[in-house]
Length: 357
Image (cartoon, rainbow, N blue to C red; front, top):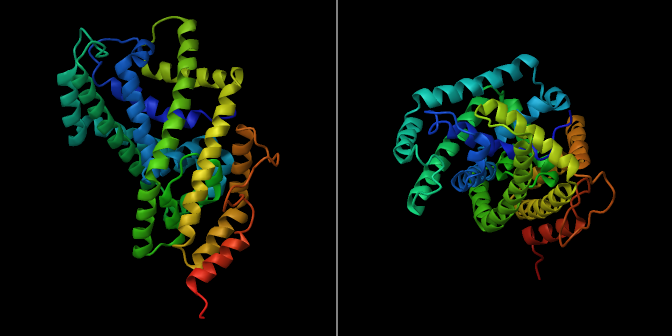
């Protein structure tokens, strides 16, 4: 089955489904109803933002890597991931989360605080004071952040140094097709400490635009989720088993994508915005990089390995771009596959070696 391009956005929601069980374990709960409650929706949105911010800050990259390992044979082959190593990664992530819930002091402290806020008579906090709902959401966001960090650490612990480098190189090569980019990917170019400081300044400058892009992505996610929840609800019956609900949710999202083409159009527009954002980040980084690093980056974008080329083709196919020639360059933009613009090279040289008059 071809993976839904909406599926990567499901991760934070599924995190919330699993974590919600912490406070509702005393009795079976209709998960579909729970997920549509006002308070739980806020929790989902907070979790989604936490997950997407982890990509911006570098911590979520290994989760994207893990998902691609599960979904794509070309990707596994390109990264040299054996079946055994893939199984070890999955097992390690599961064990890490189980141990975290059972033994992690941070988790246990936050769970205890959440438990104090839980009211069996109002399990979704629909009638709770605003202050109580906000506190519950804050604790949930912290738990989600810890969960993402723990899963990322578990995945990276099973990767070789070469695979970690390839992961960052892959992000550079595919940044034009990913709406949320990770500036951490430039580490593949062996940044100096001074360059890292400059990168952090660039991140601060672009933070507001990143937040706007993130809001667009989350808006698309929840429009799709609402449609998926409608499908699950029409099928009838309460679902209290988290695994069953996750399976039904993924299947419903596949159905949404097939039956509601407007979501593909929305997704295309969001990716176009993300592409423009990637271009800004990339051009700002140009002035930070050495000529050797620039050459290396150009090679990763202009001449990616075969498996990266295959992944790019699949990404374009899923969003319906298919190389139709409709890409419209803006000011200083760099069309993927094209060499670095000569005008930029000229300006860069003039800035570095101003003429003496």
